[in-house]
Length: 237
Image 1 (cartoon, rainbow, N blue to C red):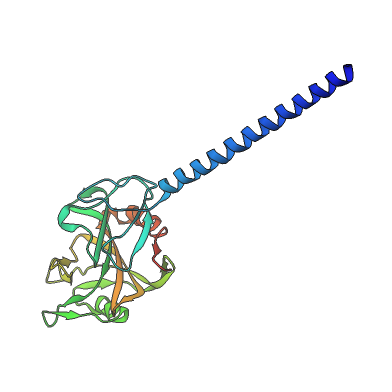
Image 2 (cartoon, rainbow, N blue to C red; image 1 turned 60 degrees about the horizontal axis):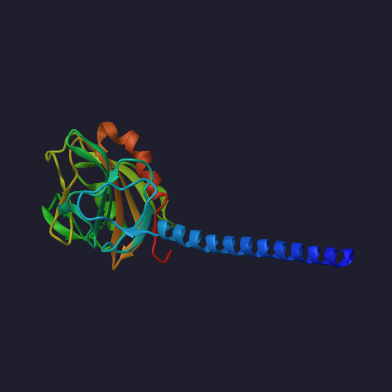
């Protein structure tokens, strides 16, 4: 009788242990699946918001109109999308950061360059390669451009250099490029810029990036912009 009771007690104990292990295993599996899915949703890149909106640190975004497509993470505080008239297009994407200083916003600009303004002939001319765009910068009569240095952005190789309006320029804000929606750009006196030209031609039109702001803000803004560029991933790369 004692032996029977001992066996029954052992059997109940084994059953209870098995039930507990089963419950723990099922709970962990369920929580892991749910937690993983939730994390995946949080980490998923999203389109940029329309209008002038803040971009929270840590969020990941992807381009919709701009080609070639890419994604990036927001690193640091104060990043935002620009005003409605400067929203993303197939050949332009602008991010702003911090407060305006002396009328300048801190800007990180991605662009596909179709045309540049030839200051000598006073005409818009087509740009058909990265080499042509670099030559335009290096030989522009009203710009002072530094020596190109190798750079990589999202695995795409290219060159980078600093540029600004020359002190003896007869034009205060020389015309630069023209976008497909008709918007034209200038290099403004009082600004300082880091130009990047990548070997990512789109139908013969080069991809370029500008880190630009008021001259007094450049040293502080440059590392903030480069941290964002370090997260860039080009589609298919």
